[in-house]
Length: 130
Image 1 (spheres, rainbow, N blue to C red):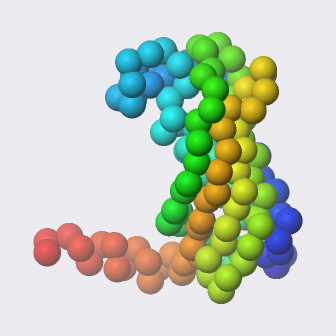
Image 2: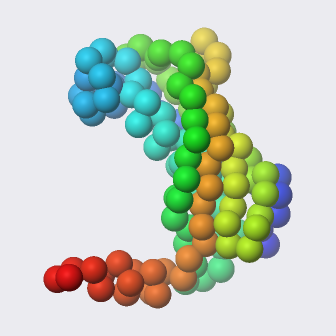
């Protein structure tokens, strides 16, 4: 299926000790870590592309601009929603929003770039030994 503006994706998790700021090193509190919220938002964008990229193609994240507006405690469910808002060649821009059971916890934009997997990995692996 072709890529079109308006594609939506979703990802969710439950906050546990393993994804808190204290554990991942982004703070000292046992609350959902900002980097983990960003990863959840990115996963939602990746999920939006599922079944919409060509064989041998994937996407990589290149930019994220977000705010983390509300803390989420251990035990609470958190989820992210992404919507493809712009396609500029191989650059895909998403609006991303994260929520917990009490309401919105963060928002922002995320840019992904379509790549050919073999070519991309050859370039990445070419860095070894340099």
